[in-house]
Structures are given as structure tokens and as C-alpha cells.
Length: 168
Ligand code: GNR
Ligand code: NI
Image 1 (cartoon, rainbow, N blue to C red):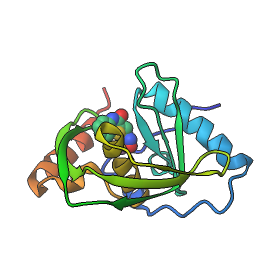
Image 2 (cartoon, rainbow, N blue to C red):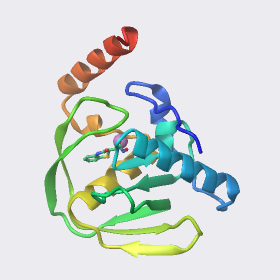
Image 3 (tube, rainbow, N blue to C red):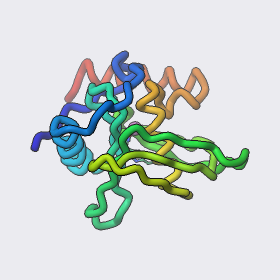
């Protein structure tokens, strides 16, 4: 397995729209394994392939306390079930060090393929619903900072650009 490099805002490659996985072969399973290792090593609860510069619709997550319940979502699709939203503080491995409260739909229906290509469905709520939407946004080239005001997003951009110019 390998730890992959995570792209950081404002890297333009994070704006790429990922393509559906056509078939789940050994190379996709290797990608999933490497993404899981990368997510655990970075202490994240989710990671989208876009963040490691692979533009295919693959997401890994683990919301368990113990970090031993990996979830794999391939070609995930979400339907918003009603207009109820709820606020949640979000962070992102591609926007390190910044945490902001974002409103998202609360009631969603997920369908996706698992690592064996079997379709499954979920009616997630709470943090799981937030995380799924955050990850699918990545696959569509979106970041949580896109929901903030221009001024807040600009402030985060400037700070991260400075940090990346002077990494120590
Ligand atoms: O580790 C992560 N934590 C988190 C917290 C609240 C809402 C979303 C997330 S996802 C994030 C990892 C990440 O950047 N996934 O794309
Ligand atoms: Ni993220």
C-alpha cells in the first residue's frame, strides 16, 4: 500500500469533475486500499479520489471511533428527500486548519457500489449524511469553502498560499 499526496486548496486540480468507474478491477481496488491508508494516516473521516488527483468517482470513509469500519462508495448518487437542512462544522484535508459551519440537506438517500461492485443503499443522517455530501462535492469539483462568503474564502486562500510558499 502507499500514502498518496493530498491536493490543497486553491489547487485547480481539485476543480476536476470525476468520471464514473466503468468496472471495478484490480486497479480500482488498489486505489481504494491506498486511499484508505492515506485517510487513516491523515486522521480524516473521509477521502475522495479527486483529493489524491485521481478523477474517478471513488470515496472512502470511516466514521467509527475505532477506525476499523472502512466504507467504500463507488459511483455514489444522492437524492435529497426534503428541504430540511442542518448546520454542521466541517473541515477538509484539502483545506487544512480551517473549520466552518455549513448548512446541508439533512435527509438524503444514497446508492453506491461497494468494493466488490455490489449496489447498496443507505438513509444516513447526522455526520454520515454531512460527510457523504462533502465527499460527493469533491467528485464534482466542489469544496466546502465554496459555501462561504467570498471574503472568508479569499482569507483562507491567502493564508494557505502563504503557508505553501513558506512550508516551515
Ligand atoms: O476528516 C474530515 N472531517 C470532516 C468533518 C466534518 C465534515 C466533513 C469532514 S470530511 C474530512 C475529510 C475530507 O476532507 N474529506 O474530503
Ligand atoms: Ni474534504
